[in-house]
Amino acid sequence: MPILTLNGRQVDVDIRYELEQFEWTRPTWTDERLLAASPFRYDRTPSFYVYLDDTTSAKAGYWGDSGYYDAEYARGGFVKLLAFLREETEEETVEYLIDAYAPESEGSKLTLRPPKLKIAKNREPLSESILGGVVAGPNDYLNKRGIMPAVQRLMGVGMVGGAVALPWRLPNGRLANVKYRSTRGKAFWYVKGGWPIRDLVYGMNVVYDRRLARVVLCEAEIDAQSWMTAGVPAIGTGGSSFNQRKADIIVQSPVEHVTIVTDNDKAGEKLRADVERYLYGKVGLAHGYI
View (cartoon, one colour):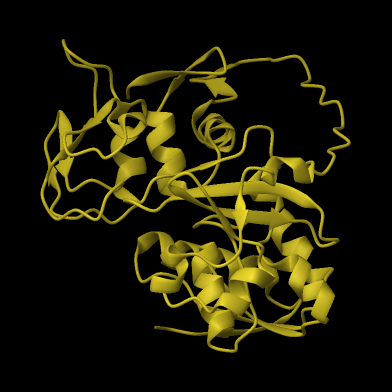
């Protein structure tokens, strides 16, 4: 497998396997690379490539998009791509890859490492000043997506430059992170220094404010807003990953019943299974399909 440098460590990563966990438009797989439509744009032409192994001209995991809208998404490395596909921060993706691929033993020889002492972080909410440059209120992008102005105001969305700002809040309403989604294409990014998405559930502040007992659990922020627009309380995982921390947040909240609605792809199927595994027996569960 190709070797990536992650947090200063050399880690063998199965790049092809990781990419195969996601749905691609018009993909062509070869031993050397994947050619497909760009995941960063609403694209139907195979204008995007990823190297699956090291070559004489590029390292494994390097990618390029010939039809890019933004130079930031013209080319890059594997961590940036996988973080986008997994809908999480790059720091979270690095942690995932190390956990998945860095072995504790090699062959029959045990690799002993000193205990990794973690200093407990008393993580603080972000300052609301981070949203100082955001023009708060309903915007054309979400209006065209069918999101009611009242829902946009409830979730505190706004515009900054050519991106929609989607605040993520803690159950007590304090600011934890902000996702910026480009209004052109599918590119997005998170505020630097924000809380990891793995430790958050989108819309949980509304659950507490309104003491909601029944919710739909979906993936993206805008998915949750779409359900809210339809009059159905909803929360979001922020991507296709679910873990014990997210489960604990839900179980400790006023929520008593969760209807799981995910995308109809491999990542969505995995998310559905993970949510059921973590929440079974702790809250009422049902499955919804669209």
